[in-house]
Length: 288
Image 1 (cartoon, rainbow, N blue to C red):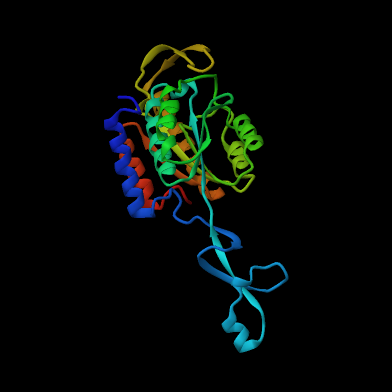
Image 2: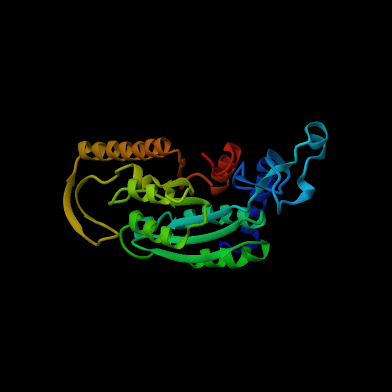
């Protein structure tokens, strides 16, 4: 089933309707800006000065204190949602699942008039969908995502984050969809993504092959990203050590996100993408 199949789009529409019910439509439960202006939610008073909109003067305050004060309101700003979808070769068995998660998040964003941009993530940043907004962009977005293939070599989050930093200074919400099994680590890359006050959410996608070692005896292992092969002997002890190392790595990622104030959710390809998005929405969206 393609991402533009009518049956799949109906599944996305159900998630969007749930988002409207739970969050009022947005992927972010609170989008109010710290800027002050002519919004709808009262924030503060300020002294009137020449050039200010006289319609903002609070005449009741003037009648009582003979002081010209204007009302300030919080501005509701359009959110910018950036989806960074890991497309490195190690994601081959999880890429379709990652794209389904991205499709759901992007569908909700476009239907709530948020700005959306999508990139592939590997040894470089690959533009998949240029920044756009509006329901009329849903099909172009889904087609672009559907056509995305795995590419490059090792996932270099640090290099990709530097390129992202150069491309986008507009504050937004960055969702990284990846297994986060990164040879170069994730600390520097996540730090860079936060540099311009972006909110960052890490959506870790794994499968059973990542978590467990089913191989036993003498085997030749080949890295899907570098092509390097090595002959090894795997005993039950080595298999157990691998599984413990994986558990420790994943716990470290979760703790690093908590320490930095980043949103985090880990899922397995056995879990339907609808269940994952529903869980996110009930938690309050892609917020920490």
